[in-house]
Length: 405
Image (tube, rainbow, N blue to C red; front, side):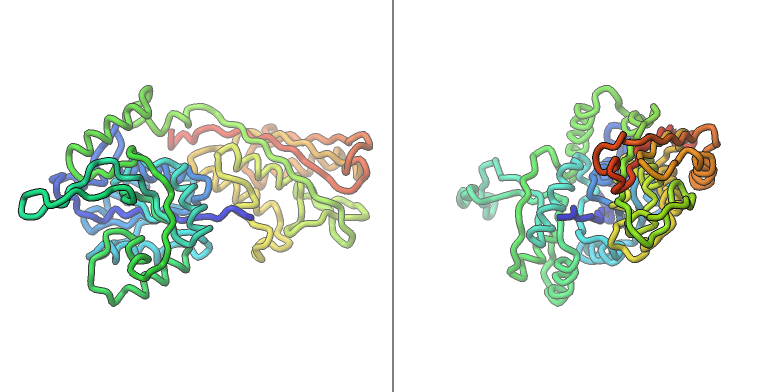
């Protein structure tokens, strides 16, 4: 099964009046606003390909400024919230890109969420339609009336709801529509499904995924974040991984096919057969695109340019490489070197290597001396040796963008 992709709707529209002049979601913990910790955890989850932040009228501009000051691996946007949580979440869901299969709703005031929780919640939502992160209640609970204990609540089946809460897109959209007439307030999105009698699966969370509600919660979050990042407090906490160059590796293979043109490195090469594929099947450029994306931890071309998408039918793979470079740059990196090898028994690749380097230079913006194309055979071994197809390896090096360092 293909792994589902998700958009995270981060709810940051509450007033947080206990925090005075500073909006709660922008209050600092370990040198970073609470909201930023949640956003970085979300974008680090492999399943997440977009984030929608729902802001209140008092925070929309500061949040927009915060987002503009940082580079992001995924698309991040801001929308206005509503008078209630239900309205704010509905506004965020309405702004989710059309190709997202799963919608995760997360409270901006939970800065200690981990990428793993987003990934586990996505998979559970995909399987069951709706799932929430929750933790078993450990405190002894008392039912109180008129200031005195009435009875002790049996806690065996009690769980404390957290976020993220995940849903198939159709499930949560339908739940919002079907509960619109209900007058009672809903404190979380799972409550909508519960009111309709629909099942909601549990993804076990942990006590560390706390919600900052009171000032003392902020102190606890600050301390826990400092424990999690003991050697890199403050504003550098999330930038440490971007101090040094990164290297990514890409590999691709395509089988030969009749009645297809052979394109390698953006160059049409005379040969009796081309390569089979949804796009132009340029195995070399696909390996290069994968190497670039991998270096920036952006997934692979199958995720960004799925083979079943009609937009990429017979597409020129130079377009894919340009898009990969743009994604790398948007994530705050600059490509500096590409080294690639084509493995083929036939045709001969080396006579075309110079032309390929020129095409790759145009697609990546790299200087020609930073692009290396080599070729070898498989000595008659394996599917390449039997001339059933062509394979390619590529290595790409990227460095932090100076404007984002």
